[in-house]
Image 1 (cartoon, helix red, strand yellow):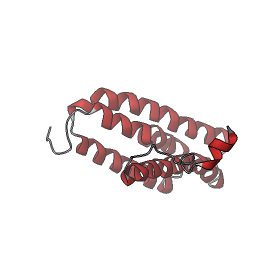
Image 2 (cartoon, helix red, strand yellow):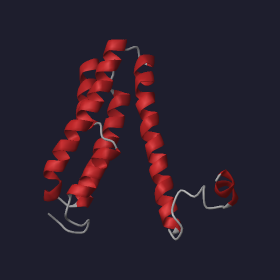
Image 3 (spheres, rainbow, N blue to C red):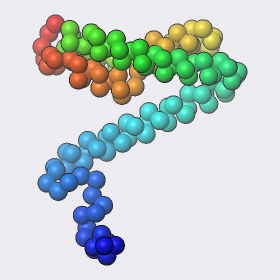
Image 4 (cartoon, rainbow, N blue to C red):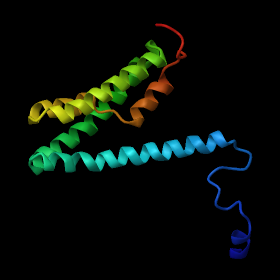
Amino acid sequence: MLRRLATGDEWWRPLPPGVSADGLRVLAARGVRAFGDGFVALLLPIYLVERGFSALAVGTIVTGTLVGTALMTLWVGWIANRYSRRRLLLTAAVLMAATGVGFVAVTEFWPLLVIAVVGTMNHRVMRAFLYRSNRPCSQKP
């Protein structure tokens, strides 16, 4: 059995035979996105500690990001079918960029906690946008 597994060149392929090169690109893009999401999850606490926040404050802000993501996913699932995908994705992109600027510009705990809860979004929320919205990108609300 080991010999059979080691002889063909099909055993290492991440996708089944017949899938186009676009499928491999999508898989690679999802891997890079997941790596970036995990990297930011590690980078945020390190960044906050370097800025002088206590362990309790860092834990509270990181917990705020998780609570915010959960609440944002529920909220988006509730409203996504009312708006076009384009509008939702543009809004999400602006919110994520504003969150990044906020984390860099703000130095006080309470405003950072609000930014963490309200502004943090990850790929799960973006998927909720895409799956719950039943309007195409070109359709206006």
